[in-house]
Length: 164
Image (cartoon, rainbow, N blue to C red; front, side, top):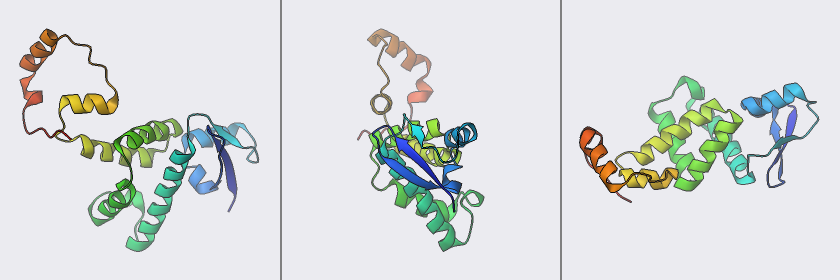
């Protein structure tokens, strides 16, 4: 199988199998514009993120073999639970957030969908302040403005909240 070379922003080079490289719209576009023998520069990707992306596709291949089903054909049940348990176990909130941005930049739709699902699970039942901290959202309301918003949209602040 043909290999595609990429270089991350921290100077690490990776050789990707062509089918894995073609999962990225950004890399695919670069390959269409340049020679397949050129090294594709990825200025918005760190090496740890590329390792995680390769790990994702490795896990997908393992699980497809184990369950005998293509990843995108079965997005629920045992298959998805097994994937999430394996891929999510060593990923901090900050790393997940960075990885989301990177995968979005690379245009890897299948991974982006799953990372968004993981982030949604992690933010479920969190306080507004927790979510602000996680996503780096500036608190730019005065206390009076925030009180008014909480009153006008009280339904959005109902239910259990878990602060971690």
